[in-house]
Length: 41
Image 1 (cartoon, one colour):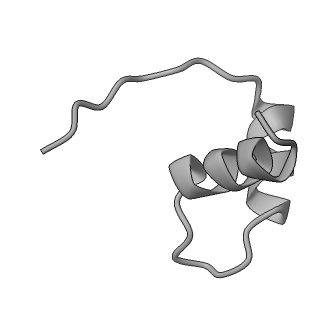
Image 2 (image 1 turned 90 degrees about the vertical axis):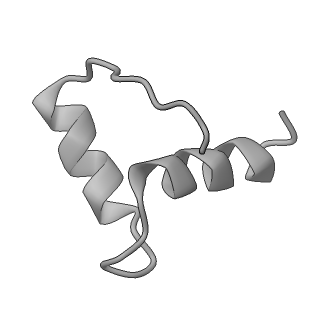
């Protein structure tokens, strides 16, 4: 199992991440990785 960590984000950032979900079951990790991959990082 991969290790997990906790990050601190502002409530506004959390709300913005929620709006980026493609499906209700998409995790924040999946959202962040999708954004990173889309930007070629």
